[in-house]
Amino acid sequence: MHRSLRALTFATAVAVAAPALAETVTITFVQTNDIDRMEEEDGRGGFARLAAVVKAERAKGPTFFVHSGDTISPSLLSGIDRGVHIIDILNHMDVDFMVPGNHEFDFGPEVFRERIAEATFPILSSNILEADGSAPKNTIDHEIVDVSGVKVGFYGLTTEDTPVVSSPGDITFAPSLEVGLARAATLREEGADIVVAVVHTPIDVDFGLARAGAADLILSGHDEHLMAFYNGRVVLTESESQGNYSVVTTLTIDKQEEDGKVSLDWQPAFRIVDTATVEPDAEIAALVDSYTGKLDVELKVEIGVTETALDSRRATVRGEEAAIGNLIADAMREAVGADVAITNGGGIRGDKEYPAGTSLTRGDVFAELPFGNKTVKLELTGADIRAALENGFSQIDTGAGRFPQVSGLTVAINPGRPAGTRVVSVMVGDAPLDDAMTYTLATNDYMANGGDGYTVFKSAKPLVNPIDATLMASQVIDYIAKAGTVSPKPEGRIVFE
Image (cartoon, rainbow, N blue to C red; front, top):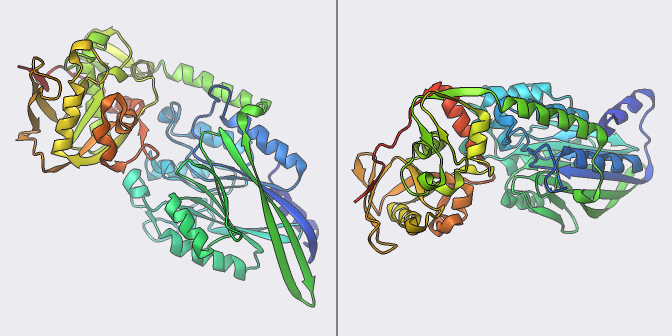
């Protein structure tokens, strides 16, 4: 496997001093971000194709492979091994620098610490603080790498929203802009010619860093945009997600020294590589295949027993309160700590019956929830919830997939009334739904985006958005495994009058 530019540079520096003068140096940065799916999909993305892009660029000259965070979660296998396979794959790809994203904390602070300890590549962390104010072990605050006399400095930032959208425990996150400006100044004082901020921050923070001059290059993740921006002073890039595309930035740098004074001039060039156009790297493809095989085995693992019968047949989940719908909605609500939960019956797809006493497997859950939907958390009014329920029951006579399976709610409906007027009463817990009151809702990302006619959710305030959310299936698996035995049943959450 190709050794990283960082490793090669340090190895060379031991033998010879870095040159004081570099007339023209070309340095390439291959960026990825928000990649948790290890395999390709429809001939695009995944680690093997991304590895091919990196290998091709390294063959041309000095290249940094930079990962801008969000990788150990969410994915099917990560729900089982907590991201061990992702770190192993990245270790084989010789990442030069990676910054943690918010999803690196989805399984709690201890798992975060375990995963970064397994990484054989540098983890940049300039604004993540342990409870005692120290930096997490196995991270570096900043670093300078010499490339043919040009000194490239790196630092890393993780979004300050992480405690809201993930589970970092007592780990805290210092203000991005403040830290970014300080680290850029430190790197320049230490001799960096080019400052690179590897960040996992929202786009408004990205542009705030750019406007403030907190780096020369900002390689960002989090928003999953495909973007190459240059204002004549600062470069800002982001590479969409899942390795579908990679933004390749090449700097041509002229560094001159005369009478003890150094002058530097650089220009960027950008290419967006569609990974559907490259052949997968054979070594990484074989590693991914080995983990895909492991996933097949892991899906057969039993996670718990249902003491009551479950029925996911189409007519049941799309036409009445279903025990399996209650199970899924309860798991979603608990996972994000919402007041109530609504999920569409059409998203439950197993179309089978599980007799009481059935041992449930991970594969059973993924078969029931095959779309890879994530659980989001929204803030909205009681009136919005009422409108959502009216939509959910508006096509009950045709067995539409929008039929709601709920948690935390008791709904009485009259299906004989015209659509839009069928909800007779709604209780949230033991209290009537208050149209003027604000509630928190767990739902899936498809519905949150207006899917199945739930357009009212599009105007709700997101507390956990789709980018920060985790897989519904993983949450249901964890819910069942934690309980050991479950006994969901229809209990009058949806009553026909």
